Amino acid sequence: MNQPEFRLDGRLEADTHFLLDAPLCRIGLMDDSRFPWLILVPRVPNVREWPDLSTPDQLQLQAEINAAARALQQAFPHGQKLNIAALGNVVPQLHIHVILRHDGDAAWPAPVWNSGQRQPYDDAEAADVLDLLNTALLKNFSD
Image (tube, rainbow, N blue to C red; front, side):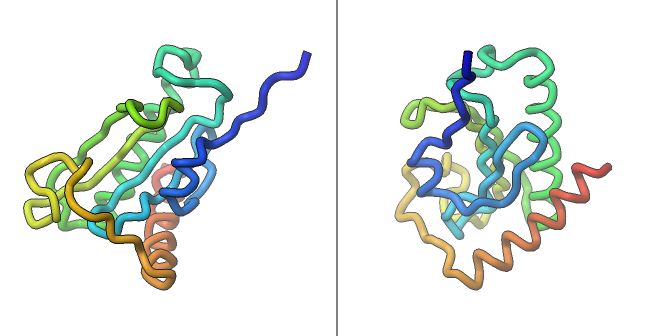
């Protein structure tokens, strides 16, 4: 019997810049230049909730969340607080938000959700941020 294939929810596809495929997750940069914000999506078909993953996949996801968080901290040393969340109220596909916050950001201290108008990256800025984060992520995955 054929296994279903992984498909990224169209809303996540539209809202992120592809960064890299980690061992388990597709990692994308949220297209909002106001916040250093990564989205991790396990490349496992039909997963909506953390317990839907196998225990080994849960452990791998935790390792990738940690690597993403460290990469954000290294790439953006002005950050003061990490926000890590899996909400899924709008997009049911399991995805993890890893956001680096600081007291001067556009939403501080409130949550980033529904906090004003999104400010998409321009092409050059997106390329620079993606390069910076790619370098930091690869370093953290090799450590």
